[in-house]
Length: 456
Ligand SMILES: Nc1nc2c(ncn2[C@@H]2O[C@H](COP(=O)(O)OP(=O)(O)OP(=O)(O)O)[C@@H](O)[C@H]2O)c(=O)[nH]1
Ligand SMILES: [Mg+2]
Image (cartoon, rainbow, N blue to C red):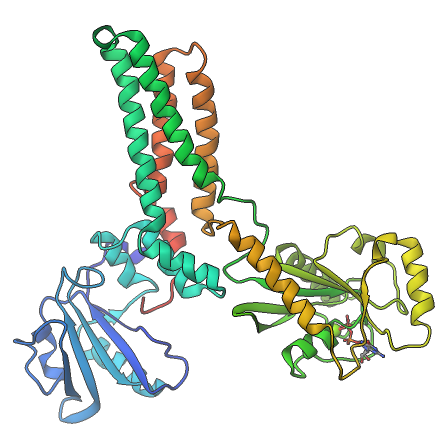
């Protein structure tokens, strides 16, 4: 990442700069002294007090650009340890653009890269790597759980567990060294006992972590509810009903939806992405075939899947569909005359459909919607009650540590040469060091910061 080692003054809008708003906050970071920017304000920034808000005019030569509020955070007591100026300006997007340009062209600043303020906080040890990841989660979360986990990571919660684990590791490592160097002084039995008890302590602590790493196929940071089925099964109709909007095209032509489309849907405080998909059928039309491929991929990652079946319009491919697992299945078109006969035929072929509900998507009276929402929320509550760790990097490091620990414990309980044991222990130490962020390779930083928004 090109900005990793740069220390120029950077500027960015830290609030959303895509839509007009009452206010926007612009941040400048990394300058020597606030008076460097004296020519832009009607007050002398030389003697300003840190953490006090000043009301002043922002000027460009003789012209007043905006009236603003300004706060100075003096490094190292700032978000990222550097000197920071925060300007609250009027939130018209053109105004924001104009002010950014002014500081870039005449104030010696450059546009900040995504996450660059936070990268500097990491570099200046104001935040740990886990806190940075927590912030990323907090800023991108669409569910209360992800928000909470982001917040808790930011306040160092998981880091404390890692730190405790690291301390137990160090204690255990010392016990191994002691058993090599001083077993004659303290007695072999006692040294062995100490070695085993410290290992057990470490294992117990690690168990609390591994329990939180479950193989979640779906993304809880941005959970998705997906509607699938054969063409004309009513997916787009249901999509529109749930959104209370005519968002998707509904028609009796099979294959109307050719690519998936999505909109946000809030259920019990969780912001899901509701996804309407292309009807899953074999198609010689390559655009539709691509849409079907994408829909299948979406289905794999979805948090909650709803399969719709119109028993009156079955085509090849249903057998394949029935091999999948769905959170909810509905028969649609229950208002049509032949519905009951066709439904029974289908149940005879696929008995597991016997207990599912039938709905009429053309009816203005919707009595099943509440039950559906309850069911979605139930799954959400069950999933989050296990407090799963959401960060992929942490999950894979914990799993990797589990593997290394397993090998080490096996070696520890057999007559293994101390040199080999020591080597295994070092590998374990390396895993834990990565977990607590002592070791953080550049590619890890790259992938974390590439997710960040500009201005953070
Ligand atoms: N009578 C009746 N018609 C329905 C019902 N559900 C959907 N329809 C009609 O069935 C047709 C297909 O509905 P869509 O919602 O477009 O189906 P789809 O699954 O999105 O279809 P594709 O986009 O082609 O995959 C439309 O004419 C709907 O008005 C229902 O429960 N009863
Ligand atoms: Mg459709």
